[in-house]
Length: 270
Image (cartoon, rainbow, N blue to C red; front, side, top):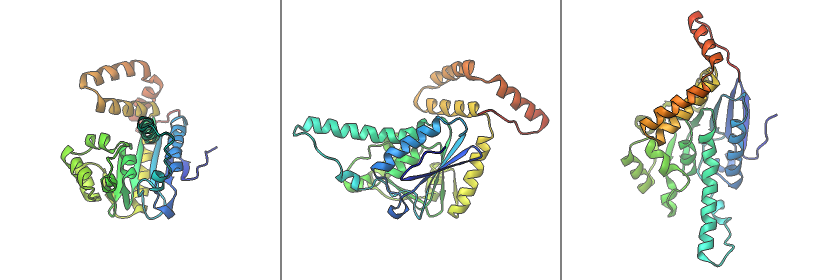
C-alpha cells in the first residue's frame, strides 16, 4: 500500500519508484507540506525492500521554482529574546536540511530528472540525488542571493563536491542561470535530452538497469561513494574492507557469476 501525499505523486513499477513534485499550479515551489513530505516519502522508500531505484521529477511545466516565499512569512517569533529567536530559526533550518538529506540517505540510487526551472531549493534538492539528467530548456540558479540571504539547506555544501569551486562561487555570488548544456559540461548533469518525455523514458531505462543489479551491491556502492566524498582514501579503503567482510552476499555473488557465464540475467532477492 503506497502512502498518500498532498504535494507528491508516488508510483512504483518494476522495482523503480517515481516521485513527482506535484504542485504544478505553483511551479512546484516548496511549501511547508512539501518539505515534510519529501522526508517522509524518501524515508518510506528507504525502508521498502522492493524499491531498488528512485526517479525524482516534477509534474507540470517546471521541475521546481524553489522555496514557496509564503514559508518565510509563516515563521513566528515566540520570544522577545534575540538569542532564543535565533535558536528557533536555527532549528528550523536544521529541520529543512534534514528534509532534503533524506534523499541523500535513501539506500537506493536517486535519479533526478529536471525540466525547465530548477532554482533555489530545487538546486538544494537535486544536489542530494545520485545522478541528474536535464532537458535542453532546463536551467539552474542559486537564487537565495537575490532575496538577500545565504543559501542554507545544502547547495553550498554539496555543489562544490560536484562542479569546480570557482563556478560554484560565481553562481552563489551572482545568482545567474546555468543552462543545461553548461551543467552537462561541468558534470552536474549526466546527459541532456530534447524533451521531458524523452528524458523520462531514458532515465526510466537507466533506473531499471540499476534495479536489475544486486540490491546489496548497489546499496554498498552508494554507501562507499558517499563515504569517499567525505573521507580520505585510506579511510575509504578500510571501510569497504570492513563492509564487504560483513555484507558481501555469497548468494548474490554466485547468481551474478552464473549469469555472466551463461550470458543470462541474474535474479536477485529484494
